[in-house]
Length: 504
Ligand SMILES: Nc1ncnc2c1ncn2[C@@H]1O[C@H](COP(=O)(O)OP(=O)(O)OP(=O)(O)O)[C@@H](O)[C@H]1O
Ligand SMILES: [Mg+2]
Image (cartoon, rainbow, N blue to C red; front, side, top):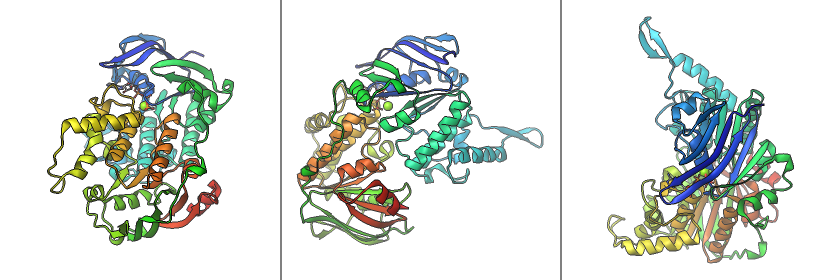
């Protein structure tokens, strides 16, 4: 069978980085080619070259036998290449249906002459696509009202809407739950059958085997190798290709946990007006990592937003160190030593158009500032030093802290956000899906950091959809469902089955 795509000797230089160096990559119709590598390895960059976002510095791209030295987005689209980007690109201000057809709205003629957007057709076709991806909401729903995982499904539907021949999925499952992942895999299998070639980027090992046909490993902008999935011996083999060293497989070591009796944080009868959080009370002990499990839409993020102050509860109290807190906004929570690593980093995690150093220093500077955050003695030199310390601690892959955060790879952006809260010396840290988009090596680093913070006497809340991760990292796991705490399990008694059972 002929290749649909062949990328030869691709090089991409950015002002201070060699993002890709002599990469070779190809794709056949009807296959899933997995692209894997550490954060910053060059995966997204390679795919952006294929979709016409970036111009390669050198190299050739052959599509359907036609040779290019670079592609425009239009050429890429005309060849049926469709991308689901890592940073979701759906538009909040439009409805789902409008998002699906943005840029190519089908028209009809009113009174036989006036061109008009054909809403009837759009909504009908949108409904079919939503059924196909298993998203049970009306096509007329505004995207801003959707959760991240629902937005991701819209993104997938959007790619399907364009009848793609090549579908590039850059971490498509990063915020999907198990059921949604299975659903996505069903869609992928159907697409394969119809001859679509799929490039699949993911950090999740168990997905690769399930869905992949071939795998290419990138490291520091170079190809380490391409293999058929059945020729890959073990996950460890892939990991060592990725990181160039053996990694300890599972992170956790129970002896490292030192939970004390002292309650540092307490939520009392928290209720949100819409009942997405309904009478929630729990305690967090010093040194403890408290996990929150639950299905997407269970209300975990809503609860965390209330604790962090970005949303106001209808009633309920928040206590820290035996004192009742008044939290009217995130500013108050920062002052009170509460930090939150949000699940949606592009929107709420960092300031896109600022440098790494400003992003790391901001919370600390706010915390030390006077007059409600409007005035503070921030010294650029101090902030730079602070930022260097914490970007080093987090092993952010960057050329300097003066680099723009927008130019970092997805995983490294996440590290910057965590670095920000470490720098602000928060007492309670809420990690909402902290390892989303983080490579296997860095994941372990983040777990280790969480455990170290707990052992320094901080309280840690970890919201995650990855049950194995919750099970290996947390001391206790709260199972959340329908806005309520269903049960709280200790690490010893918790299992995936028990959690799922309680959640549903
Ligand atoms: N627009 C840009 N300007 C400068 N450097 C960039 C730009 N885009 C990417 N880079 C750099 O290129 C390298 C590769 O980044 P890329 O986003 O391709 O990594 P990735 O493999 O997708 O990582 P992740 O798993 O974290 O998403 C990184 O060092 C990144 O900082
Ligand atoms: Mg990427």
